[in-house]
Length: 121
Image 1 (tube, rainbow, N blue to C red):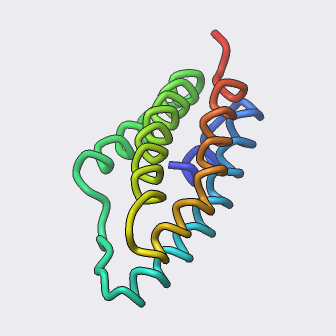
Image 2 (image 1 turned 120 degrees about the horizontal axis):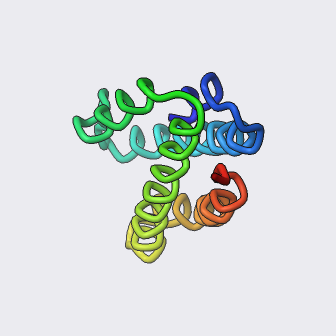
């Protein structure tokens, strides 16, 4: 979604938010791939149907509707991610626990950024 927002968002604050999310999540995803490989956990190769539907809808939007939908989805996605990371941060696997603890501050920062980046109508 962030890559799409970098291309389609009109509001500079939405583009700035998208760039920060892309940068942070790319780094986190690369780390997670290494952890999953070490733990012999197979990560999904494709986007699930729910998220693919959101991507398809996002691609079909433009202008203010694009910015509003993107930012609303980011609030929801980051709230869910924070809950999952908080759970894992208290888990038993040391590598996943450390990963979650390391990346929770960035997720919380992203959620705070959504308010400032949300297009004002």
